Length: 608
Image (tube, rainbow, N blue to C red; front, side, top):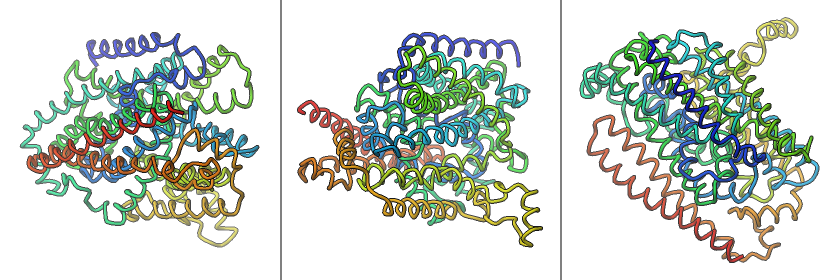
């Protein structure tokens, strides 16, 4: 690195710390201010903060497109995301805002009753914090070390020590205020730096026309097929991904994770809805633009055999092609993306331990000063632990972790996304089985029994039982042998059987708890025994169903928007124009109907 590159890096560090310092006083007002930004986040901040939390440094997109074209994106998330994002915008976002909680853990005692709910809330908090939060931060930090380390010439541990400490510092200074507003800055830097680099690489490769010709010649016409297709996207896998999208709103990485935290921090329901709509546009289309350019240029410049570790492709390109100044900006953009994701997840994970353990169980009468102090210590220690775990993840297994984090980790629990909101009969015991079973079931199916049972133990058991203990359960992450739908199907069906079985074998929740939840949240679905108790007419029960129609317009909008983007980079002008016009039309209808529903709901509450 040259002096100019170091200056750019220093200016970035000063900027994010300065922004955190600006919000430090506001974040010190109490737990709602620290973890829910005083419920004052505008829609545009929600949109940018959410997409920054999903994106990381973006190098995963470069790797996926380089390896398998657009089909890699469809398989990783896009088929699910075009479905769950509009569903969350018009159905889940308003419900989370109405609930008026700080964490999704509080949902448990609003939805379920008795001592079980109280104890389960604490168990859920610890589980969500470590099985979801720490694992996610570790995964993102492993990517940060794998990509930024080669660029700087530093080890992964040194990267995590220096820039992990910086992330911890600004996160604990001002909580969600610092996280959300820094996310906006960091996302802009991430996009700007990589867009400039993508254009430079395309120029070095001979221009876009030459790049596309080389891509077609070396990878075939199907490499840039806009519609979901390819060897990894057979009909069964496509169906599995669509089913996943329908239920993904209950995922900790979608509508029930740090995304839900932003909804709970929104100024009102309208800001929550608009924030999710803008998040969808940014996540499904805008953020991909620079990384598609980089990946296509890389395909034109290198063969797969010349890239032994795809996870380091972005860093290798930067070292080889980025000039002074742009080199520093790219390093900053990479760090900005990862730090945005890490701070988002870290603040969200720490909120469980503080709100649902410390304040709820240990010190319910703690002063605001004590709560803020504990919040900062918890955030710092939690992130530090996650960085240690991230340093243990092998770089050559990051491709497995991409799908594990985005899909397999939560498939077992997905039925709860609908059951606990839309069916009155679901109870706390079934919820507990579904949630706590998610991580062990997902890890076992995705990485196989050999990843759970150490080799020495397998050898010992084989000697005792005279049976082969190797490969008892295969690693379904080997997509060359097992299509995605196989692992997904095993987990999803097992989740339904366990959750429904436990529900029907145990008692329902008390009617008083159910009526209180229904009055506050106003969910759609199968709530007739509860609504009858409240004297709600059938017409009133049906008032929310138009939201489903609105969501269908949203699915069409996001799908056509994604197709238009892919067709544009494939130089298919006619297809791009048709899908673009369709995206504009459905997008306008989707947005207007969503805003109208928020206004109508607000009017109903004013009348009450």
